[in-house]
Image 1 (spheres, helix red, strand yellow):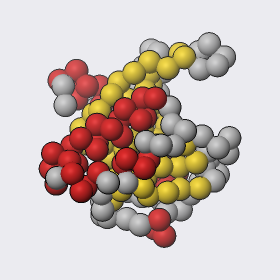
Image 2: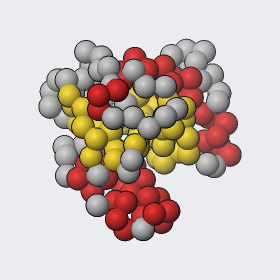
Image 3: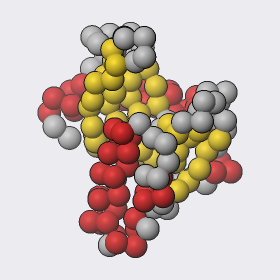
Image 4: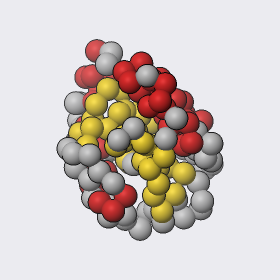
Length: 154
């Protein structure tokens, strides 16, 4: 983690532009993806509230959206996003570190998502994901391959 991102992860907001934090959660070599009501695929996480650190926001958002206890691990990508209404925000994508391995049966989805899948990283990349979420998953896939050999990313 770069020093600037490490300090960002543990610095309280507010941030300008506003900051959201998303997590690539991996369990048994599979990536958790969540389907939004509009059909697009998402990663767990959300908006950092004023006076909240991004690390605390990730823990809160993952709990609210999935029922999983998660801490923020190494950063993957910090990128700008312009929403359709023209507003701007930054998205910090990190590797989420669940407290324990999990299965789909362990999830308690919020009303923000209608479905969840645990997929091999290569399969997750075939979904309708924001390009930077796909880049983050690809980065995790490269780390899995480096750590465990090519079978981990299949």
